[in-house]
Amino acid sequence: MAKQIMNVRDVMAVLEVSESKAYGIIRQMNDELKAKGFITIPGKVSTVFFEEKIYGVHAE
Image (cartoon, rainbow, N blue to C red; front, top):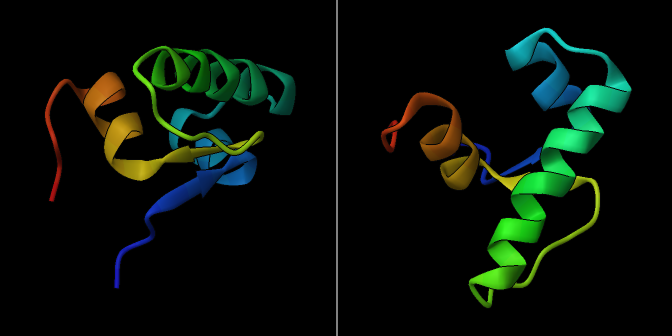
């Protein structure tokens, strides 16, 4: 089963960024999700939303 939620370490690995940068990206994405009415978890982001924002398409 594919991972549904990414944590800061996952984001760091995919984007090859520092921990603080990864947290900033997650925070930005979670702010966008909150504005759309979704429930968010600090320090974690939906894998589907992450892939849509980074790659522009839903990767399956």
